[in-house]
Length: 309
Image (tube, rainbow, N blue to C red; front, side, top):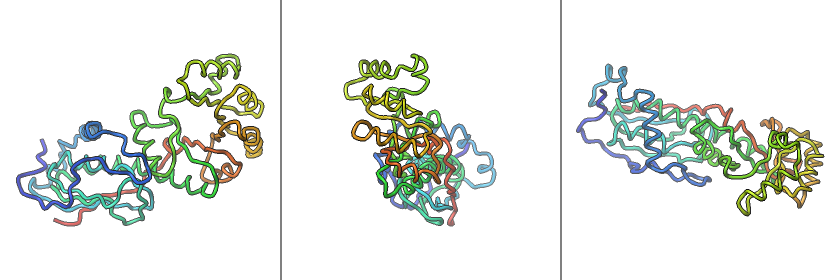
């Protein structure tokens, strides 16, 4: 079994005593310290980081180094607490300083973390730390690009439930770090009557809205998915609070917004891309929900560089 640290004292650089790191522009890291430790430990165990044969075979157990986690591309950072926890779990004497916090915009070459600790631990934790941060920073970065694309309009960018199983809290947190907003967290968090719900009851929008009003907690917003202007009118007549305009043309969106003005919130969705989102926003919709924020975000290129002994 790997023995990543010895009794050799280390010079600490502003250690982070807790994995909790305040996020800029978001509502706070979504996991408790215990949840963070459990998640990161499971990831380390999955990677057999406590039995890293390559590192044990090549690096002396008492060797310690300074390392920097560096951005290779421009983007938005998310997941710093998880990276810190990965390095801490393999070397609880490691000194870690966050040069960037979640929500920060970085350029290529910017240092995100500085770590001073045992070489074995740093090497064994590297991939897990990067996997967490590259994935979540990718979500934050893509979100920030959509937010920038609709700047100057009243439209807000939202995520969806199209998240990686088990990672929903983290991916939705990364959306916040990128300047977006969260749609409902789960099926209990709000009412969204979709096309298949309506198909299951013969397309009766009024019945669906009425039943939802009777079952949902008081004050719960009722949203109805519509793909035609006729459905929009039916949902409005039924008293829906919000209309999800699914895969509509720009002309249809403009007409739907006019129908819904002062009556219901409008949300465009379906096939939204960076090169189309501005035109959609200029139609006057209140919100634009984008599944790609979480299901198709490319990882942000980050790397761990050793600075010296």
